[in-house]
Each structure stands twice: as structure tokens, then as C-alpha cells.
Amino acid sequence: METIFSFIQNLRWQDFIDIVINSYILFRIYVLFQGTTTFRVMMGITGLLFFQQIAVYLGLVVTSWLIQGIMTVAAIIIIVIFQNEIRGVFQATNWKNILWGIPTISRVAPAETIVKTIFELAEKKIGALIVFPGRENLYSVVQRGIPWQGRVSREMLKTIFWHNNPVHDGAIIIEGDRISEVACILPLSERKDLPSHFGTRHRAAAGLAEVSDALIVVVSEERGSVTIVKGATFKTIKRERDLNHYIDMHLGKKKVTGIVRKETFQLSIAALLSIIFIASIWSNFLRRSDTLINMEAPIQFKNRQPGMEVVQVSTNNVQLQISGSTALLRSVSSTKLYVEINLENVNIGENTFNLTSKNIQLPPGITLNQISPSKVDALIDSIVTKDFPVQVDWVGKMPPNLLLSSVQVMPPTVRISGRSLRLKDIKTIYTKRVPIDIVEKSGIIFAGIAVETPLKLASGQNETVKIQYRVSER
Amino acid sequence: MRFIRRIVIGLIAAVAAIGYTGNAGFCDPKEPSPAAGTADKLTVVRAQICEEMNNLQPVNPTAVFSVAKDKAFCFAEIDGIGSSTQIFHNWIRRDNHVAGIKLVVKPPRWSTVSSISLRETDKGPWRVEIADMDGNVLKTLRFSVVD
Image 1 (cartoon, each protein chain N blue to C red):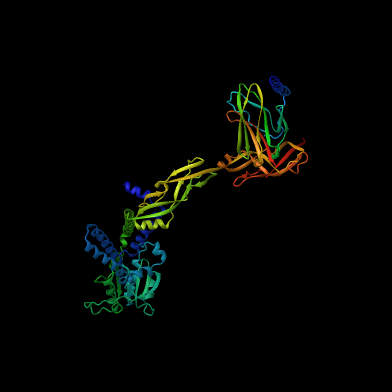
Image 2: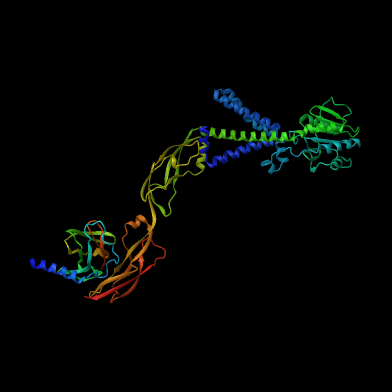
């Protein structure tokens, strides 16, 4: 249990997305192919994979090699042999259904309407061939159908099978409450034991029933009889009630709620198994620790207080030696690794940080072996404002007969903004150079304030000061 | 010798009687008061940067010195001296400490002076910080050395 919690806690968001995407793909494969032969073959291959892992674990070299060989060709077998079925899945549904749709049987065929119409057709000796698909997909065996997608109604069925209608000769497929395709050509049965009065319609119905789990209803044009075909069984139906019963049984209409509940449960189990399966593969990756690589990671400082600055760092990058499975390390090297240093409780000035695995966010399964250097020195400073007295920087040559007996600067102080460590050693701010040569008598002049970069005058401070001076004769 | 001593005491007493506190106008307008905690509350009564000293009095107080003058003097008159103590005249050029001169002052009031020799490389803005033994700055005087 602790291992599971630890596994979940160490998951990065990338790992989470990775598991979710692949679990969903697996789940969609189940949803799209369930009940088909392809799905059964895929399950078989999965079983082989499981046995191969056991064979490897037990050291059965030849068995393992054989199963691996079978699995290698199995992928080709699926694509080549079941290409029609696979194509059928993708052609029959749009992208929305492929990505999101869940096949349900909530739309149930209006069996009573169909049954009444079938017997009306039989009475008038109008031939009809109606297919009710089961769980298996028919698109690999049914050919050249014309998409119809019309809601089932008495008039619609009669119109389709009316003998002057161009599509009356083929079979129709009823899915839910809709006629999905008309004028379909079904595979003909090769059976020799069929009654002699059975025509092409019956032979086609028998052909489809042999290769699928569909229920086919045939209305004979010559004799006006109604026959249902399923598997290898033919049954002539005399009463509407009986036909209704067989159709309901085939569609499971009387247990719709139970079936929906059962299907929902099955889908939930499938979704859960998909997640477990992918998570198992993912954790299998984690357990392997067969590769060792060196990576350079930049240093990032976090939780900087307002105005705080990292003035100097002993190194900007550190070398990390990490180990794990090759696949995981490849994913790590494609993303960027950072060494994070927390500045939450640091002091202004020189700070030494010891680097450990806590400073690096590594995905689960990756182990940090070494960090070089293991210590980083950083000079941390903050931006402050401070008042300083202003002094005039006189230059030039004072007239020899004069004395500068007093100097007054207004304002006497100026507010400077800059790094605290830099401001610590400053006691006075000077004006720009003021030539003394021009001074002949007492007066007032203005001078700019000389502020060395990166210091600057705080906002609202004048860039010049007024200098009032008094000159006296010697 | 006795005669000179009398003159010094007389001068100090005279200045104290007049209550002169002029500082020649080139010291910082707002100086911190003497630091609390010192036994004596030293007060700088008068302080000046001058070109010469004559009879223990500053001559030609100025804010600008020609480097040709050879010497600059810092005169300071201290009051509130409870017992014999020391003060410092810290001569600083552009925030670089150039000289720290230790001077003895005696109760109750004492005038003292320090000086530095000026050289060609000393041009620029200067200040003299008058500080007590604990390093508390009692007064700052500012001047410039020019051509």
C-alpha cells in the first residue's frame, strides 16, 4: 500500500498524462473491437505476451523465443487477415465515435412495427431480406450496401421492398431503430442440404448466418412465407407473436435495463483494467535501472522575496549523474531538468547551499547518484532605498585671493535606491564636478547628482541640487 | 610654559562665555547627537577645517583647499567632557578612510586639532568625521582639495 502511495506521490504531471492517454487508447480499442474476431486475436496475443514474460522469468529460452516469434508475426496477421474488419470499424463510424462514442443498445428496434410489416409483405408476396446484426461487425462480410440511415417505419420498409424500387433486391440492415444500409449483397451459402424451394434470398441469409451472429428474416416472394435464420438454424414462422419473440430474444429487448447495466459494468471493468495494465507497464519501466547518464542542469532560484536579487553565483549549472531505465532517461533528457534552490529563509549576503536530491524534481524511477558541485555559493542582495548627505565635488583652481568660507547644499540629503550591499559602504553622494574657477563672489549654482550605476535616484528625487556658497577675501 | 597654559585656558573660557557655536557652514546640517551609552555626553561646540592654526585658533576656514597649501587642519572644540577621554578625527577621501587621528580631550572643555599633508593625489572631495571612543560620529566636516 505504501508503495502505491509513494508511486502516486512521485508522479509528475507528464507521467499522469502518459498513463491516462495510453489507458484511454487501450480502452477505445476494447470499445471499438469488442465482440469481433480481431479483438479475440488481440486478447490471444496479450495472453502470449503474458506467457512469454513467465517463460523469460523461468528461464525457458526456447519457449520464450518461440512465443516472441509468434507475436512478431501476429501483428502482421491481424493487419492482413482482419483488414476488412479493421477497415469496417473505422469506415463505419465517424471520428467522434472512434474517439468518444460508446456503443449502446438503448435505441431498440421497433420490433412490433417490423413484424407487422413483414407479415404484410408476406401476405402480398413481396420478397424481403432483413438483417438484425448481433455483437459481431458485419462490414467485412456484407458488401456494396447503400447507406440509408432512415428511421424504421411500416411505410419505409414497404417502400424499400416494393418490386419497382431499385434497391428492393438486396438485404437491409436494421441497427437500433434505424435502417442503416439497403441493397446489401450477402455471401451465399455453399451448403448442399438446403431445401430445394429455397431461393437466392434464403441462400444469402444462410450464408450470412454461417459467418456471423446476425438474425436474418427472409420473406419468400414465391410462397409468401416468413423464415428466420440464425447460425445453422432455419425456422419458418407462422405467427406474428413468434417472430416478435425471436426478434426480441435476439435484440435482448426484454432485458434492456439489465443489459445496459451489465454493459456499463463491463465498460467500467475494461476502463479499470486498461489503467491497471498501463500503470503496470509504466511501473515496469520504473523498476529497471540499467542505464547511467550525466546531465547538465541549470540552477533556478525560487521563493525570492520582493526586491531580492541573486547578485553572484559560484556556478550556473551543475552536473547530475542519474540512473534508470533507458526509456525513462530518454524522456528525462528530452525535458529540462532544473536544480531548484529555495530562497525563502536566506540572509542578505553570502549564502552556501548544499545540493541534494530534494533540489531536483526527478520522475519516479530515476535515481540521482551524484551532483557536482554539491555546494553552491550565492551572493544574495535586496533593493533598498536610503538617504545620503550630498557633498559638492569641486574641481579646478580656486582664485588665490579668495576663500570659500561656507557651502550649503539644498536639499542636504538625497534618496538613493540600490542593492543593500552596495549601499552599505556608501556614506556620501557627490555632485557632478563643479568648477571652482568661475567662483568670484558669493552666490548660488545648481549641480547634477552623480549616481554610479547600478545605483539610481529614488523616484520623486530631483536630479539636481542647489548650492549656496559664500566667498570671502583672504 | 605656564604663560601659554594660562592663555589656552583663557581662550577656552572666553569662547565658552560668548557661546559661539559657528561651524563655518560646511559641516553637515543635521549631525546625530552623541551616542547614548557613553559616560560623557561629548558635544562639538565648534569645528572647522582651516588652512592654518595660529595661537590654537583656526585661520582661514574654508571648504576648498588648493593642493599647493601643503596642509589641512581640522579644529574641534569639545564640551561635556566628564573625564579625560579620547576622540578621533577620521580623514576620509571619497568614502576611503585615509587617516584616523587619536586625540586626547580633558574636562570640562577642550580644543584640539589634527592635520594631514596634502599631495597631488589627494584631490577630490573629503570629509572629517569627529567621533568618540565608541565610534559615534559627533560631527562631520566636508571640504574639497582642488588644483
